Image (cartoon, rainbow, N blue to C red):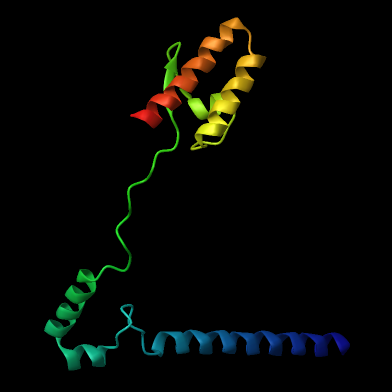
Length: 134
């Protein structure tokens, strides 16, 4: 008897869920579809296609943002032993550093480096100076 009551409750539960799902499907199929352009079909018939075309042309003429400006290249590249190196990175300073920072870093690196590496550091320093002067 208890088992029969539980079966009736579960059957009623499944029927109720099935009715809700069918109702939801019918609602979604029969509702009025929304326009993807943001304008309803009534506004298309009122304005006419020529007016909409004119509005579209006006929107294309007015830019929403300023044109991109030229990017400033801060890094200075130089070649050493067939490889490209960033001169600021070789000296251990941020790209675009001022002349005092470049000179200070160059002098510090020249003290630290052995004779073979000094030519590499000098080349990096010369690349920065060449870029700044010309």
